[in-house]
Length: 72
Image (cartoon, rainbow, N blue to C red; front, side):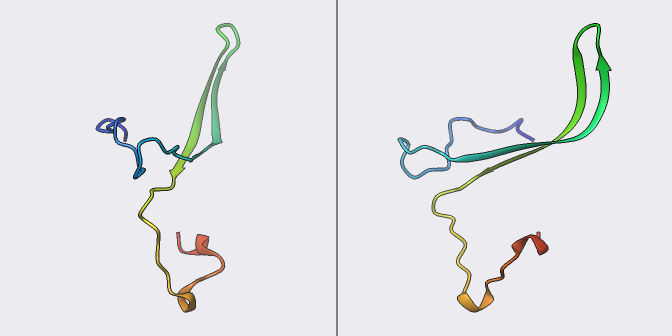
């Protein structure tokens, strides 16, 4: 997914601005526990979200909904 990702490109208009990133990890499955080597193998769901400046979603007031997660 991130193979062609260019880490020099930032989603801000001004290069001195900070980028706010929401990062979440959800444990989906515990696959293996190796107690001798102290290795835990898991299956995780990673969520990384950032706000891209200039890409504000313009929704008319009449079209707004209270729970957008129903449509995602």
